[in-house]
Image 1 (cartoon, rainbow, N blue to C red):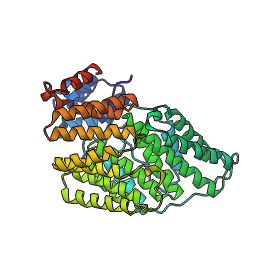
Image 2 (tube, one colour):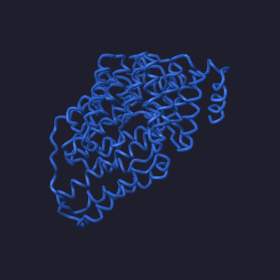
Image 3 (cartoon, rainbow, N blue to C red):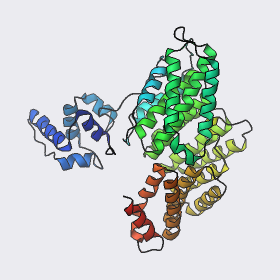
Image 4 (tube, one colour):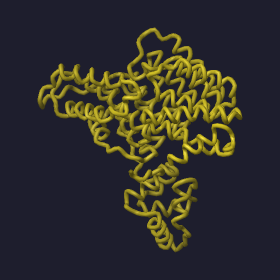
Length: 436
């Protein structure tokens, strides 16, 4: 298995083929060229790649080493100025197929940071909220695309997406193949404007689903690339709700990676053009989570109220990408928000109620929710109940091969460690350590 690359600086080194020791040597050379000295060591580089932000002088030296303009260092800040942080293609520039092709061809990677900066993704969300889709004319060259074949692709995609969570560990290659086929048709086929719209909508849905497959395996750069492609394809298809869904997935990823401010801003733009009540409920719920992380309680409660109001008013069928949104999701995620704000008692009630009514087919979601429950039990000072919930989540996550859920339980290990002598906790810690 490839070694995890957990920081943009490690990725920048990887791009150049440098070890930490080699980068430290080059930083020292850059300092000597400035008639200065730098005590940079391999250990210092390791700290930069984990928990320490380099001081201004060290960043200047790193910019020299990576040949990055110094105005970019000041404008973007650490670590977003480092090489490898790409800029999303702007909407409305005829690059949709190119973006889809890059996503479809992107090898599964194990990097856990985003390839796009939060500022760049916010700019993409603003473009989506303000630029009207301009559907390109249908292709005039290449082999005609058979509408019956597109019918089959659409049905196959629906069938794959409707499989229970436990089966989805086997569908990744099929989804990848479908997306490649759709991109081939868009790039080389001849089709009417109506068929072009269907192909772009299909590409958007496939890219969004594949993005979640990548995200659940902690391949964040690949997930980000697919959701970016989904935004482009949905925009080209004129499907504002699906575009909002892909933008909200990017925002959810920002929340997951500890960037709630960028998430809240992106969701605000996404909501400006979202019309379906169920879709709006989901977006408000995610925005509430971002505000909870920021300890902005008034904004959080306002968004939770909007999420509940929107879900209760839903009469039309929800778009496929959020058809799973239910009162169970509203209850549990509301509870998670309240837990962030310190209301553990109300949070426990909502999380417990939500888990109780969650459909059996949604086992991945159940594993996530059980981890929320464990986290809230820990906040409330009940490590024994927390360990029981975490152990159930871990067992379920292993059974359905859900690495992200497993990682969520592992992330709680430091909070369990002080309670190692408590019933259930010692067994959970033994299980976690044995699997390390």
